[in-house]
Structure formats: structure tokens, C-alpha cells
Image (tube, rainbow, N blue to C red):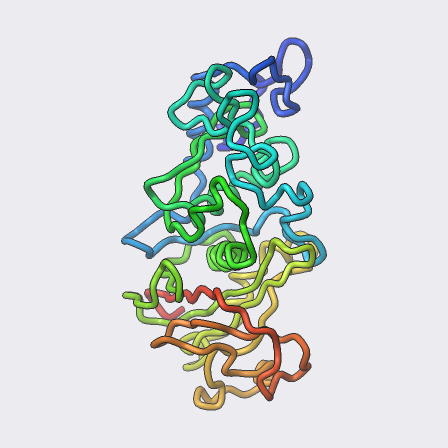
Length: 331
């Protein structure tokens, strides 16, 4: 059975799908068998499994809902940035908690947030969206925290945190800094060809700037939640020399999008460090170098490639919440 088969048992005898929200007063009743089926499906999604601390596997094909013209915010209007387990910004509706962690659906909780995590119009409404939601929760919440909500089948699934970049988003608003941190995290975990690459994340916030893996791969930054997404990456020093093809990064970032419509929202801004010192030649040099300032070899801020076509003189907007990725092997 496929991990995300739309099981026929999920169709109600009355002819309406659980995914459309055929909800009795107080919310759908708990269905342990369905919950177990859906949890197994969600848990089987590969990628972002901890190897050792913050060293993780990427593998997210693309950030569901993100295109070159529409950001994740557009899924459900301004409610998108409300708390991850809220309804209209509230943790409870009609006396029932939205989050079903440790609770019984239909009795003490609904499991039905709106906005980004909505099971009808948000990430929980499709298989690809659920994969993105799993990554998003792991980026946002610490490993000691989780949310238990419904997916499009009506089943309850638990999504567990890992990195804890923006824990306040669980119940509150996600401001610009929050959006940038989650954006960088999702971008860092994207691997367009679906292969799992062993990477380590470092940042000037939460994650810390130290790292164990040796090879600086890239730095990701921007905001994929704004109406017109801003999604940038620059090429790390160890993937811009010694004959290593930077096509590896382009494939890693964009293949999943290019396979759909050829419109990758991720923009290669240039080189994170000094391209001249790396003996780089060719068209990519004209995109500019020294895009980032560093603590050690972890970026603490980076510039995009807006406002100056060639970017040879340091133009562009500065982003203060980048994430740098490091690879165990240089390939």
C-alpha cells in the first residue's frame, strides 16, 4: 500500500468525504484505526531524520504551494501566519482545544486549525502539502514539542518538532524574522531530485555557527511566505572550486520545480565568499561574490541580487536570517 493512498474506507456512507469537513457538532469523533493508518503514512515520509544533533537528511522535493508568483501566505489569506495550532488565531473554539495532543477528538479537541495547516485549503489538504508541513513543524518547534491535527482524510496525525527555530509560532503570529528563518530552513532541506543528502545546518540564531561537517555547500535566505516569494541561495566555497560542478546545487534546489513547469522560485545570487580567491571564471562570476558576511564560515547575513544586474559592487537587499549548509562529503 502506498504511503499516501487515498483509502476508500475514508469515504462516508452519506457520500461526503472526511476531507471536506463533514463535521458533527464539536468536531469529528476520534477514529483510532484511521489515526494509526495516517500516522504510519506521515511517519514514512523520508527526509529530515536526525542523524546526530542538527545533522540531518534533506529530501523535500519542493515547498508545496510555492511558485515564482505566489508565496505560501496566499493559501488562506492573512490567516496563514496565525499560530500553527489555532483557529482564527485562538487556541480554543467553542471550549475545545484545536490541538489534539493528549486529548480526544470530538470530546476535548477538534484537531482542525485554519490557515497554513488547514486540512481543506492548507498544507494538510494534499500529500505533497503534508510532506511540507512535516518539515515546517520540524523547523519551527523543538524536539520536545509537537502538534496533533487532522489531514485531508480526517485522520489525526502528530507532527513533531526538531530544530526549534520559531517555537512561538505554535500559538502566535509568525513575524518577518520568523518567516525568514522557516524559509531558509525549508530551502535548505529541498532536494529536487528526491535524493537524500547528508547535511548539517548552522546559523547565527538557535542552531549556532559551529559545525562538524567540513564542506561548506551553500547558504539559503529569503522569505517564501510573502506574496511574491524571495528565495535565494549563494554557492559555498567548497562547491565552487576544485572542479566540482555547481550544477549539483542547481539540481538540488530546482529540479523538483523544473520538472513541473520550469519555474524554479530559488534564485542563485552568486558566491557566498570571494570568487576571485577560488579562481572562478565564467558567467556565474558576474552574479557577484562576497554575498555574505561570516562568523567563521557560517553566514550571519547575506545579500540578494536585486537592484544591480551584475552585482559587482555589493548591491542588493541584506537578509539577517540565513542558514548555511555543510556536507560530509564534497560531491
